[in-house]
Length: 345
Ligand code: SAH
Image 1: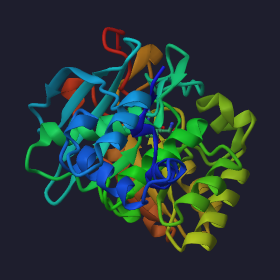
Image 2: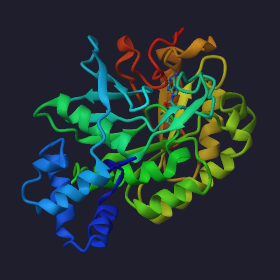
Image 3: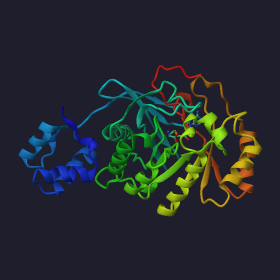
Image 4: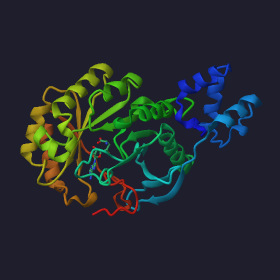
């Protein structure tokens, strides 16, 4: 079987070219053809020696997932792309325009192992990891659909847990960041994670300036375990320790995501406990009122309680913002991405 050229971040492409005793700049030329000029075959790469083109064509393909469906939100103009992979599996990716940004939210797995109570992506269990090429392809397909508008930010917040698929996440991020790839600065790329110990440290070794968001969702282990069953393996304490480590290493403020779920973690008491937990820690909190997803029967606390929660954090000296999820009418908001056809309550 041929290998997918989109799996190779710049360095690995250079190594490949060097292995074939070709000048390294050939790697840059190939990237330019693929990512800037959007060609679909090696034969079109006319500034490469013919023999090299043929060698690549014999051993590699330019993997082409396809857009099975595009849905455009009437509420806010965000687009959800349902993408068909080589094996017929589907993943979703969401393009989110806002005043000064065009953000792409990419998926890293088909399904998810973590089974967070409130998230549709894991409701059907885990199917498989995406390859780096399949993550990069989401970027290519969305860029093409965006036309002249340039994607400015990328968030690894779609289906799956990026750090449960570390190698593909790192390789895809390297291509997205590369000047000859999509040229998106590390400060505009964010990975959201449940916080698998060890993996975050590994990620920042490859991408020291990448943004990190930790899905915290509770101020203590007992509650977090009810919301995220995986907390049995990685505690609130370990996540905070990882976030502190990252801040020391990168100088970038970590974000803690906190989904507000009525009757579970959204009272002012929980807000006070969160202030206590985070006191003295350099960070931001991103409150996310729960979006309806999967048949879990949970709901968001409503805007008054959300603002009350926010003000407790602010008065306690914790930097916090509210994330207004986008694309709810096309089932594209946080936690709603799943294979199409699966019922969402
Ligand atoms: N697996 C990664 C990426 C998940 S998506 C992680 O857990 O961080 C990004 C964010 O959306 C996470 O914080 C996730 O917990 C949150 N989310 C999931 N389901 C949600 C829902 N129904 N409503 C609001 N946010 C949700």
